[in-house]
Image (cartoon, rainbow, N blue to C red; front, side, top):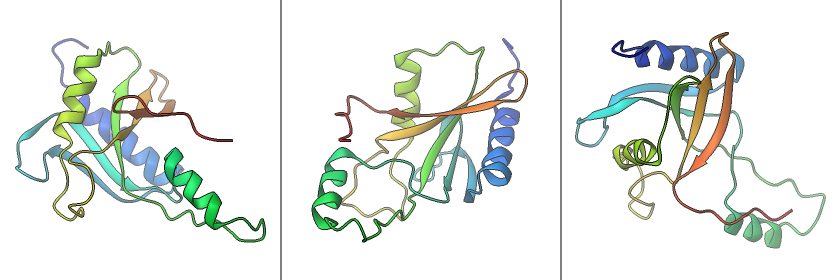
Amino acid sequence: MAGVDYTGELASTVLENLQYQHDWTNLQLHTHSPVDQSPLPRPLISGLPPRRLYLHPDDQIEMLKKHRSPDTAISETPEVEWVLPTHLAEKWTLRSFARVFDSMQQQPQTPASLPDRPKRVVLATVHADSTIVYYLMHDGIVKPRQN
């Protein structure tokens, strides 16, 4: 794979999988930053999953306080997620992941109260047989969720 730019094809494969197999909507392929149009280190995908993928532990505690009754349904309103397409054969370092997080600056429509960059990314790892495995990868240390 050295010397060949396969990242665009990899991103297209992941985007189609999210759309047709996982029912994501509002999918966009990004090759440049939405803020200043600078090139990203590699293509990223943004989109809306059918339900929320992750609930921060602090938010989880607040939701449990508000919804003490087991009859009350907890809202699973999805939020926009960023996806980083990778191939299983790639060698990643903390520095290369940091470059990706640094390139994911706040989008123009994001409220100013939110952090400058996303705190997590969905890592989409594609195997040679086209199997795709998804992991949540956080920027920094995150305390464990409460069970």
